[in-house]
Length: 144
Image (cartoon, rainbow, N blue to C red; front, side):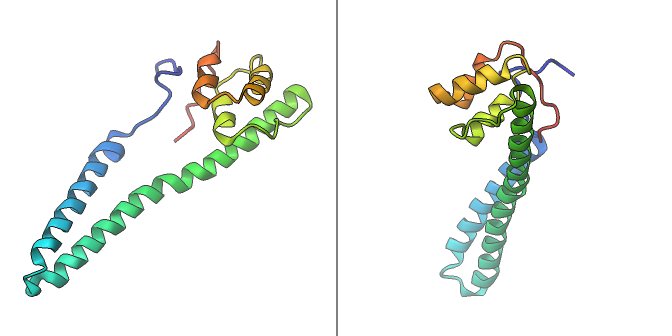
Protein backbone atom coordinates (compact mmCIF):
# COMPACT_ATOMS: atom_id res chain seq x y z
CA UNK A 1 0.00 0.00 0.00
CA UNK A 2 1.48 3.37 -0.96
CA UNK A 3 2.15 5.99 1.67
CA UNK A 4 -0.84 8.20 2.42
CA UNK A 5 -0.49 11.98 2.44
CA UNK A 6 -2.55 15.14 1.93
CA UNK A 7 -2.54 14.79 -1.85
CA UNK A 8 -3.72 11.17 -2.03
CA UNK A 9 -5.81 10.59 1.11
CA UNK A 10 -9.20 10.90 -0.63
CA UNK A 11 -10.58 7.56 -1.73
CA UNK A 12 -12.64 6.96 -4.81
CA UNK A 13 -14.13 3.66 -5.86
CA UNK A 14 -14.32 3.92 -9.65
CA UNK A 15 -17.22 1.47 -9.98
CA UNK A 16 -19.30 3.50 -7.55
CA UNK A 17 -18.15 7.09 -7.95
CA UNK A 18 -17.74 7.16 -11.71
CA UNK A 19 -19.42 4.25 -13.50
CA UNK A 20 -22.54 3.94 -11.34
CA UNK A 21 -22.92 7.72 -11.03
CA UNK A 22 -22.62 8.18 -14.80
CA UNK A 23 -25.09 5.36 -15.47
CA UNK A 24 -27.66 6.83 -13.07
CA UNK A 25 -27.26 10.31 -14.57
CA UNK A 26 -27.67 8.86 -18.07
CA UNK A 27 -30.78 6.99 -16.91
CA UNK A 28 -32.22 10.13 -15.35
CA UNK A 29 -31.60 12.23 -18.47
CA UNK A 30 -32.96 9.50 -20.75
CA UNK A 31 -36.03 9.04 -18.60
CA UNK A 32 -36.76 12.78 -18.58
CA UNK A 33 -36.41 12.92 -22.38
CA UNK A 34 -38.66 9.86 -22.65
CA UNK A 35 -41.24 11.44 -20.34
CA UNK A 36 -41.16 14.69 -22.30
CA UNK A 37 -41.64 12.84 -25.60
CA UNK A 38 -44.51 10.85 -24.06
CA UNK A 39 -46.48 13.93 -22.96
CA UNK A 40 -48.38 13.88 -26.26
CA UNK A 41 -48.39 10.07 -26.57
CA UNK A 42 -50.71 9.02 -23.77
CA UNK A 43 -50.15 5.32 -24.45
CA UNK A 44 -46.56 5.59 -23.16
CA UNK A 45 -47.06 8.33 -20.57
CA UNK A 46 -47.65 5.96 -17.64
CA UNK A 47 -44.58 3.79 -18.28
CA UNK A 48 -42.42 6.85 -19.05
CA UNK A 49 -43.45 8.46 -15.76
CA UNK A 50 -42.66 5.26 -13.83
CA UNK A 51 -39.22 5.03 -15.45
CA UNK A 52 -38.58 8.68 -14.56
CA UNK A 53 -39.70 8.04 -10.98
CA UNK A 54 -37.41 5.01 -10.76
CA UNK A 55 -34.48 7.11 -12.02
CA UNK A 56 -35.20 9.78 -9.38
CA UNK A 57 -35.36 7.10 -6.68
CA UNK A 58 -32.01 5.71 -7.85
CA UNK A 59 -30.46 9.20 -7.65
CA UNK A 60 -31.71 9.60 -4.09
CA UNK A 61 -30.50 6.13 -3.12
CA UNK A 62 -27.08 6.80 -4.66
CA UNK A 63 -26.77 9.95 -2.53
CA UNK A 64 -28.05 8.57 0.76
CA UNK A 65 -26.25 5.22 0.53
CA UNK A 66 -23.04 7.25 0.72
CA UNK A 67 -24.06 10.08 3.06
CA UNK A 68 -25.63 8.09 5.93
CA UNK A 69 -22.58 5.89 6.66
CA UNK A 70 -20.25 8.89 6.30
CA UNK A 71 -22.26 10.83 8.86
CA UNK A 72 -22.03 7.92 11.31
CA UNK A 73 -18.32 7.61 10.64
CA UNK A 74 -17.87 11.35 11.20
CA UNK A 75 -19.51 11.02 14.62
CA UNK A 76 -17.15 8.16 15.48
CA UNK A 77 -14.14 10.22 14.35
CA UNK A 78 -15.28 13.15 16.51
CA UNK A 79 -15.53 10.87 19.55
CA UNK A 80 -12.17 9.22 18.85
CA UNK A 81 -10.35 12.51 18.35
CA UNK A 82 -11.95 14.04 21.44
CA UNK A 83 -10.81 11.02 23.44
CA UNK A 84 -7.32 11.12 21.90
CA UNK A 85 -7.01 14.83 22.76
CA UNK A 86 -8.20 14.11 26.31
CA UNK A 87 -5.63 11.33 26.73
CA UNK A 88 -2.86 13.59 25.41
CA UNK A 89 -3.79 16.78 27.30
CA UNK A 90 -6.30 15.95 30.02
CA UNK A 91 -8.80 18.31 28.35
CA UNK A 92 -11.56 17.87 25.81
CA UNK A 93 -11.28 19.44 22.37
CA UNK A 94 -12.11 23.13 22.11
CA UNK A 95 -15.83 23.71 21.45
CA UNK A 96 -14.95 26.19 18.71
CA UNK A 97 -13.65 23.38 16.50
CA UNK A 98 -16.03 22.33 13.75
CA UNK A 99 -16.59 18.75 12.70
CA UNK A 100 -14.57 19.23 9.50
CA UNK A 101 -11.65 20.60 11.54
CA UNK A 102 -11.80 17.63 13.92
CA UNK A 103 -11.93 15.22 11.01
CA UNK A 104 -8.83 16.88 9.52
CA UNK A 105 -7.02 16.60 12.86
CA UNK A 106 -7.22 12.81 12.72
CA UNK A 107 -4.27 12.84 10.30
CA UNK A 108 -2.01 14.62 12.82
CA UNK A 109 0.25 12.40 14.92
CA UNK A 110 0.02 12.56 18.71
CA UNK A 111 3.01 14.93 18.92
CA UNK A 112 1.37 17.52 16.65
CA UNK A 113 -2.32 17.09 17.43
CA UNK A 114 -2.76 19.19 20.64
CA UNK A 115 -0.92 22.25 19.32
CA UNK A 116 -2.58 21.99 15.93
CA UNK A 117 -6.02 21.66 17.56
CA UNK A 118 -5.37 24.78 19.62
CA UNK A 119 -4.13 26.68 16.57
CA UNK A 120 -7.11 25.52 14.50
CA UNK A 121 -9.53 26.80 17.16
CA UNK A 122 -7.76 30.12 17.65
CA UNK A 123 -7.14 30.88 13.96
CA UNK A 124 -10.27 29.13 12.64
CA UNK A 125 -8.17 27.11 10.18
CA UNK A 126 -9.97 25.32 7.36
CA UNK A 127 -9.66 21.55 7.14
CA UNK A 128 -7.37 22.01 4.14
CA UNK A 129 -5.13 24.37 6.14
CA UNK A 130 -5.02 21.87 9.00
CA UNK A 131 -4.02 19.05 6.67
CA UNK A 132 -1.37 21.23 5.03
CA UNK A 133 0.06 22.09 8.47
CA UNK A 134 0.67 18.47 9.40
CA UNK A 135 4.38 17.63 9.29
CA UNK A 136 4.24 13.84 9.82
CA UNK A 137 1.05 12.54 8.20
CA UNK A 138 -0.75 9.83 10.17
CA UNK A 139 -2.61 7.71 7.60
CA UNK A 140 -6.23 6.65 8.02
CA UNK A 141 -6.78 3.51 5.96
CA UNK A 142 -10.12 2.70 7.60
CA UNK A 143 -12.15 5.62 6.22
CA UNK A 144 -14.68 4.53 3.60
